[in-house]
Length: 280
Image 1: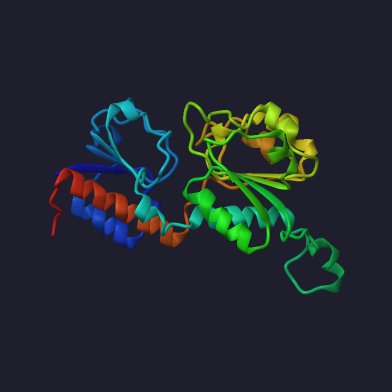
Image 2 (image 1 turned 90 degrees about the horizontal axis):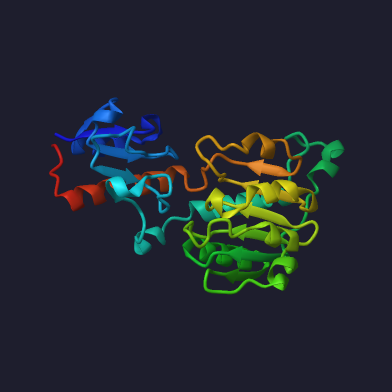
C-alpha cells in the first residue's frame, strides 16, 4: 500500500480525504512517503522527501517542485478541464476593485462615512493584460463586459512603451519560465504612468521586486497574490509597509469549489496514470 504525505491535510474536503484514503495510507513521515500531495505552496525538495516517486499538485505552475527528482502529476496541459476553473480571474477582479475602491470607512450605514467609500470607477479604464493564456482570456472577457478598454498581450507580442504607459491598470497572468522570469523589470516599471495600478496573481518572480519597491511611489496601488521566495518571501514585510499595497497569501486559485474540483481531478489523474486500484 502506497504511503501518502499531504502538505496541508487540514485544507482538504471530505470528498478529497475519502479519495486519498482509497488511494493509500496517509502518513506523517514525509521522508518515508511514496507519494507527496502538495496542496499548498510548500517547496518540494528531494532531501525532505527522499523516498517519494510521485508528486501530485493541484496547480498549473510547478516551480515550487524540484522537477528532476520524480514524476509530477499536475494541471499543466489540462486545457479542457481548466476552462471551468475561474477562481484566479475572480480573485484578480476582486483585487482590482479593492485597489480602486478601498474600504476606509466602517462597515455600517453612516452619512458621516460617505467620503471614505467613494473610490474610483472601473468603467472606461485602460487595462493591459500581460499573458494571453486561460486566465488572461478570462480577464479579457470580464473586464470588457465591465466596460474597460482592454489590451491583451502574450509572450509572442513585442511590448511597446505606449502599451505600458497608456495603461491605468496592468494585470499579470504569464507563465513563469526562463524567458519570463524578471520580465517586469525596472525599465518596464519606469515606463508605467503616474497613478497606475499593478496586479500580479501569476508568479512572484515575473516582477523585479527591488525595482517595484524602489518605484512604488509613482503608483496608486499594488496588489500581489504572489511573491518571490514563497513560502517565506524575503520582501514580505517591505511590501506590507507600503501604504498602497494589498497582499494576499497565494490564494487566487483557492475558492472552495475550485480547490475541491482541482484536488479530485489530480488525484484521479494519479490513479489513472499509475493504474493503482483504489481501496473499497
